[in-house]
Length: 392
Image (cartoon, rainbow, N blue to C red; front, side, top):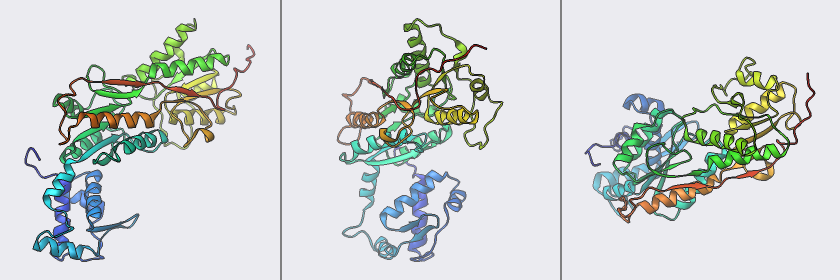
């Protein structure tokens, strides 16, 4: 590496290889667990997992889901070869270093929904024939984990990074450092206000306009918009701006009480909190339609509506961002299609364009480009005409 340090994942790999080469562990033996390796080297699970994955690919280990890692039978030949020197078919240190340089890293908050899966799919497709190895790391929407993932990918010798930033009020200093050092980097979904970087995402202003106009055409006038993501997040700013812009264009007054953003939802909680502001808002019938700024919020809102003995869309209509199902055919919610697979593909193509044949920053690419993809509304059964209300 440039600073002369050995990546920690490689230290772990060298330790395991040494245990095998010296006969401490034999073929079929179970090695230390991930937790034991984490404690021994004082590193994260991501680092340990990367080390074990690399050894599995090289043929040193077998990893069995739910049981652990075992020394592979092939390790005998690897051990003898390592002691006598490289031979035909073996990966030399120079080849390993070249392999590490041919890495492009992707950092996502999570990959638990179809939105992230489709974005990941688009990136994978674009990189398939590029000659680069593709490494995915998850930040779990934590700034600390995001920073650790960036550092780990740099230790691996990554040539470039694609980052979906976490929801946070301030930027990650590691991202700022990449920007200052002009490291090949593309930001997706939410850009960094006041900091120029290559960016690709969906047009949030237009997306909210589509949602408001759809509900307005169905006769809804009390349209609420809700999100539990920090307001400082640029995607939320855009979507709120589009919401207000659409109402102004329709000649409607903007009611701040319809903008439900200053709250937190514990999605792991099994029972609904009947004292939660969103629950009380729905219970009091203050809106006939809701726009949720993420799919998880849409599902939570649906639970509240059903708990209150109401029906979607008979009593309340819901439009959400992100398609919650694997295809349009099985989708219940009317949603904003942000074309995440296209965003992923274009981000990967953009990053490849920033790199020259040696994996270095292409000096001709000195202008930052911001690309907004036009979203589309896909209507489904969660929206219908506004119910007739009787005056109290």
